[in-house]
Image (cartoon, rainbow, N blue to C red; front, side, top):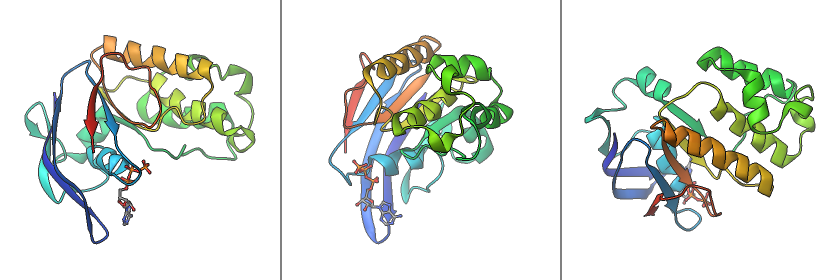
Length: 196
Ligand SMILES: Nc1ncnc2c1ncn2[C@@H]1O[C@H](COP(=O)(O)OP(=O)(O)OP(=O)(O)O)[C@@H](O)[C@H]1O
C-alpha cells in the first residue's frame, strides 16, 4: 500500500503543498486535480522520489518509501509531462533503452500503442501525439506496481486514449496502482480524486 502522510513541499521560496495525505491500495487509482500551479506535478515528482518533502512521509507498506531510493525507483514508473525521448533514436530504439533497464518486450509495447508502423522513424519526426504514445509505451514493458502519470492523455486521439485505458485496466487487474495528474477525462473507472 502507498500512503502519503501530511506531506509538505517548497518550490523556490513558496509552500506548494502542505498537509497532503492519502492512501492507495493495490489496484487503486487516484486522480490529482486542481488549477494550474496547484502542485500536481510537484506531488508526482515527490512520490517518484525526485523531490524531498519538507515535512511528512511517503510510506510503502508502512515503511519510509524514500529511504531506499533504488528500491523505490524499481517500483515506480514515472511519466512526466515531457516525453523524455532521444530524438535521434528510432521509436523502437527509444523503447529498447528502457527495456534494457526494466526488461519487457519491445514489440508488444510498440503494438500496445499502435506504434509498429512508426517503429523505424526517428523520434524527432513523430507528431506530438505520436511522441506521447511512445512515452506511454514504456508502461507496456515490464510491470511495476506504481504508475505516476503527469497529464498522460495530452495530445492523444480517441483511439490512443482507449489503448491507454486498456493498459491502465490491465495494470490494475494485476494489482497495480495509478496516480495521474490531469485536466482531461481519463479512462480510470472508480478512481478517487485528490484536489490540490
Ligand atoms: N523549480 C521550481 N522553482 C520554483 N517554483 C517552482 C518550480 N517548479 C514548480 N514551481 C512552482 O510550484 C507550483 C506548482 O507547480 P506544479 O508544476 O506542481 O503545478 P501543477 O498543478 O502541476 O500545474 P499545471 O496544472 O499547470 O501542470 C507553481 O506555482 C510553480 O510555479
